Length: 235
Image 1 (tube, helix red, strand yellow):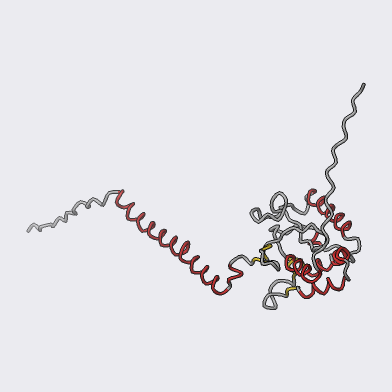
Image 2 (spheres, rainbow, N blue to C red; image 1 turned 180 degrees about the vertical axis):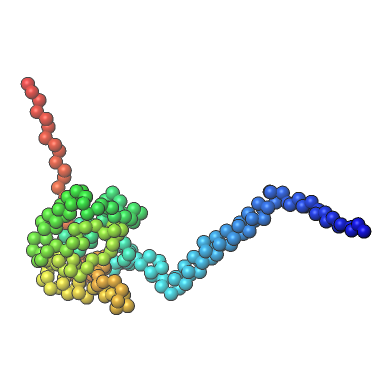
């Protein structure tokens, strides 16, 4: 007998959704994730953290501003500022901005150890420091010669602050021991006893100088720039 052979016919594949529909299925979830991430990490989280910081640490959350005896804000503990009067402690030099100490242009010199400009600048700083501090004892601390990485470092090491004591005491006409004692009192220790190094906040110690010793005499005015000599004309 002849056997019947079953023939299986495979139905043609059904056509899938259009390509535009498949792209929407991927784009819509991505947009949702993006929106949720922005709302939580870019809005809710900063608001919550700011609120907690403002409640627990209101002064630090507000910028750590320092006020004088009249209650006027004169700076921040977190930002260095220049002091040209020799009666005050001078911070590290700054390359932030055109004139230095610009909080909107934080940055260093970005000069390498083989840079001639860096070497010439260090030599000029050494000469200036020796001229302004003729009675200082010991070698000049290296941090007074080089700029900080941010240009806004508000601290000095105790050694760099004590090195400037003879100049400040001479200008203010007080015993060096009084200035040295003030530095030692305001020296901050390591955080939690292990983090960082001992340091002196320049703004705080300068304000303390005025409170303890009175306002210093005004700094002498800078000499006006000399005009270049006129060129001789031949008759």
